[in-house]
Image (tube, rainbow, N blue to C red):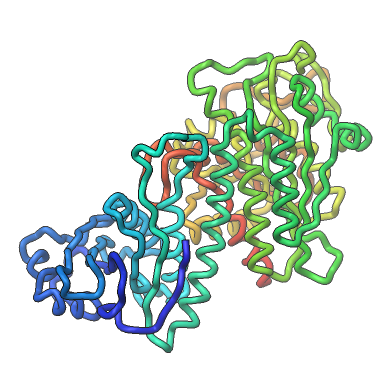
Length: 500
């Protein structure tokens, strides 16, 4: 999609549809909507009086111009209560509106910077929210559908209209929104791919292509190199699959210092059967998305490379399948992680924390200042938080505060979970340094406590995205399938850390 910003009068813009906003409880029209209403001989104000336009959040009302404007339609998008306006509500309303227009043959839309100047919403933030809303809300994954039947229409152009004075600020916001949304959609593409296409090898090939396109340094460790480094936890998970594991490392060099800066680690299990501790058959097809953390991390570093903050970032994706082959890992086995810690295997379905253990050790060896990992780690986190919030766990309050703020900015909600030392008792093993499952109670917390043993003293945040990596319905800027969470949060975090 082409996104452009122009200075001008919204009533004079040629497009298939013009989108303007309306708040709940509003009676008098002013500004751009008043000008459009006048051109339409009072059609909008009449619909307001009749109660058809209420301004309810995500309400969409189409008014045909019938030749009275260069645009064919004026679409009034409800933004809810003015006092409660946020960038995320703008993002969602624009997404819902554009989805409603797509089947009507609309190929071009024009809009103002929705909400700019209200509740402290800057022109940059407003334009960013509009761009993200359009690109995220219109995303679809039809790569493997051969039939053209019921193929959705395509909106090819978005024009944001403002004054000459704010045009540069709108352009800056729209560009950032485009980059962030494209990163999230890239992650969605990878997660939505079936596991017979998105193998560890294909994930590494995708990373190599992205590195070439965005000027990133890349190294992909093979099984032999992992063995030399002592990555016994990673290789233990991989031994049940015929697909070779790949340990993917991407470097963005935004600072002249040699300090590695920030490590973003993403779980890259391209299919998770549970291994010997096999999962139930129902919904196992969703386990192609067990690499959502890896996809988000990979997508985030490409957006970081485009935005060019002055900070160094490394993205680490340990990629493998988890399958019940005759050579597979067994309950009761003991593995030795890269840092030398021994792990008793209680369940082979707790494999994500094993590959992350070696990734955390690898990041520490690089000497990074901060670590954030993202993983579809536990069903227990879904029980605790549902599909609304990502769970956050940390050993540094200052860092998790920044992560949560970055998530709020992206509209990706994050809730901090406790990490009391008492939970560590559940992970104690009688035969090894630690066991990989601490029992049913507090499963998300004990999984995070397991990872904390490998994060050590490095400031670290673990994001459990088991509930937020997939959406089962369209709502606001989310569509059914992969969400791309937390790619935009990670980008926002890195930008915030770079400013420091």
